[in-house]
Image (cartoon, rainbow, N blue to C red; front, top):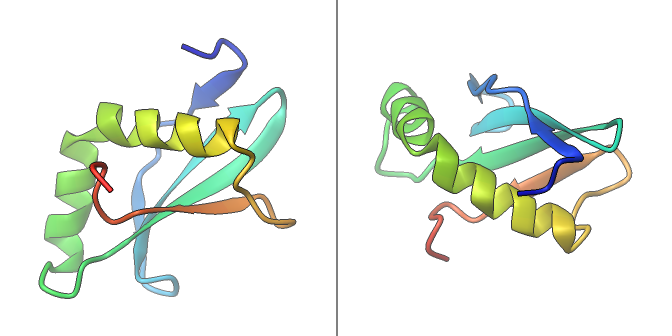
Length: 84
């Protein structure tokens, strides 16, 4: 586990992005992660599913951040499945 990476556990559905968003801090830098909603899943159900699997999504986010996959706005996107 990366001690400089802190997840805020603030999963919310963003209609603008059509994705679940969450924030984290990486050595003081605030980043926002997005997980796109699959077409066949409603927003409410998708948010519940992401929250239920938060640990797995945080692992996926940690890997993306290790690979420095964020943009200039501090945003990064994860695959729709933690197995992708």
